[in-house]
Structures are given as C-alpha cells and as structure tokens.
Image 1 (cartoon, chains in turn green, orange):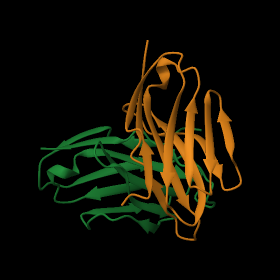
Image 2: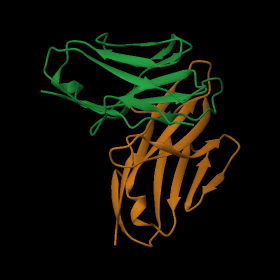
Image 3: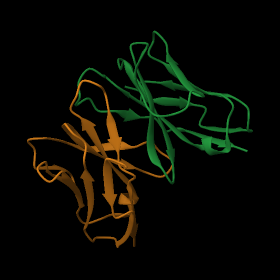
Length: 114
Length: 113
C-alpha cells in the first residue's frame, strides 16, 4: 500500500496570505488528522476528520480549517497567515474505528511565513 | 499544563551504548500509550503501543515499559546505532468516547560514533 502523501512538501508565503495543504491517506483509511509541529511546542493537534465529518478539534483559532472529501482525501486551509504559523504540518491517517488503530504520518508540509 | 511530560529533553550517547527515555502522564482515563520515532524531516513512525494490562513490549532493540499505577512509561534503546538518532515522542490516548491524544514534547537522541 502507498503511504500517506502530502502536497506540497515546502511552501513559502507572506503574512496575510492564505494557504491550502493537501493530504491523501492510505487507501481504506477513513480518518485523517492534522497536526502542527514547531520546535518549541512539539506536536499540536489541529483537527480530525472521519468519513467527511470533523470528529475532533484542537485549540486553534478559526483561521485554521479543514475538510475531507468522499475519497477520504483532506485539505487544510489557513487564512490570514501570521509569522507564528511557520511550522511543519503533519497529516496522519488511520482506520479510525478503534482506539488502538495506529496513525500513519505523512512526510509533512514545511510552511514558512515571511 | 501538558498532560504528557518527557525527559530528558535531549541526550547524546556513544554508538553501542544503551539509553532510557522517560514519559510521565496525567491523562485519565487511560486507553493506550505509543512511542513514536521521528527522523529529521520525516513524519513520526510508531515503535510500540502499550495498553493498560501490558508492562513490557519490545520491537527489536527498542523496549517500552508501562507502569499504569504510577502513570509512567519508559523507552529503552539497547546497543544504540547511528540510525537511532531521532526524536522520540510519547503519545497517550484517552480512554473515553471522544477521540483525544496527548503528545509529549519529545526527546531528541543523538548517537555519536
């Protein structure tokens, strides 16, 4: 099976712009979670989508939003970018039906906000 | 306050030596605990999963322990190799209906020849 893929891998934006990141989960996985990773904060949970519905949400402002399509692919959007949004954004997919389901992470998208 | 605390923040060891990483958590109720390894520039990869009833689990040279009473876990790396240089992240799953994971900040391990 192909792993989790994320596009683009690298992105440079300026303050005030908006950005859309894409994640394609492992075939058959219905859960997609998004995380922000920074050196100072570690992994921070953004939100999780399961079968096109947001199932859980972290403590991020409304500028961060996401959606999931019928083929389980997911997108994350960040509007009005701030310097502090510079981070590695990781997507993880899982079967999502059991608490022991392993999350498989993609390689991440490195976002730099100038 | 973070519900998962890892120590040390970073460590340097010589190739061939052993080391132990610590994870203390306050997450309740507890469902399971995973250790992830994250190489630089890549996504985390699961090493082990521990449930309430498990005390020890091994994956090659990696051995994880869990003491659910004291809410502590450790990850022991035996005979370290240069490829063990990475960040190791402890992740605790809450045992309730809502899907909630708590992440530690990670321990950065550097193995030197």
